[in-house]
Length: 136
Image (cartoon, rainbow, N blue to C red; front, side):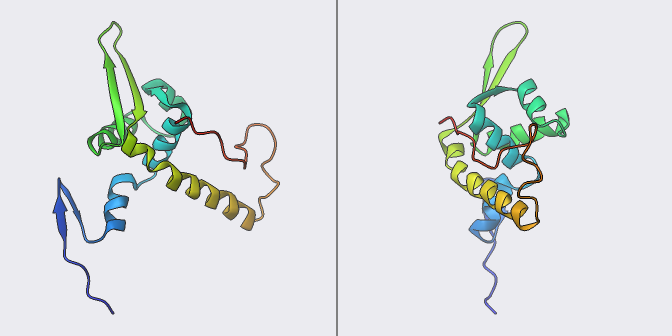
């Protein structure tokens, strides 16, 4: 059995391997979904993100957006107007994750088929099995 790697600490992140580092940045239930929504729409306001992910609370969305911004994956643009306007978009570093997220989505399509759901959810209101267009 190989010896575990030594612990690394860099900019507030503690990890033993690169996989652990990656998961510390994009892991969790919401971050991949937020990143994917931003890739689909290019630029989104907070309310648009809330509507596109109805199960997420505003508090959790705020927390996840702050973490993604701190990690350099999204850009937050604040417009000085009344009422205040804030837009979110992917940074160039954030866009490098999109092929990984697309592979994860493809795996989900294949796994749904494996479970026997190939044609169960093909009517209106469900996500298409065909990949959506990513606006880069």
